Image (cartoon, rainbow, N blue to C red; front, side):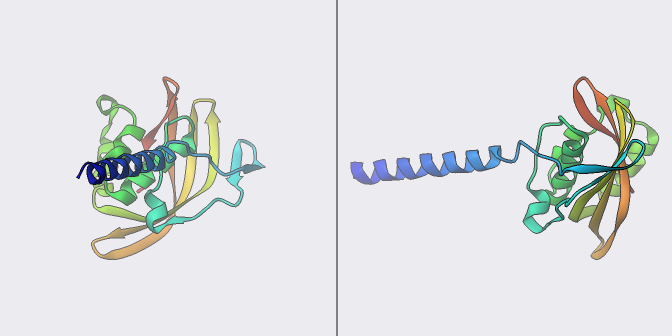
Length: 162
């Protein structure tokens, strides 16, 4: 009996340790390399297309504009609420953002890929993504852009695409 209890405890410990280390590995997001295509505009080189389980595989810190977008898109693919952490604080939300978020509430992200980034300043960027979404049983895809700002050392989304 004691041996069986010890075995069960060991299995639980190691499976929890494995799950924790697997989840922690998603904290770091490394954006793809980029090349300059014109003044202040860069395209991503060999940017992965995330789909299926991979579409929801990230929950990074907000150290880069790409990480903020990865957090938002992955959260929307998983269907959880982590996307809110990638937005500017709620007390700063404006009517246009609220409308966009109402639209996003009915979308499920199926695929996404970083395409291009445009630096407006050291604290402001537009990041273009390709995405495929599901809406009321139908799928749609295309490119659109996020607007992001650097605030208190974190990149945050001012407006998502719609």
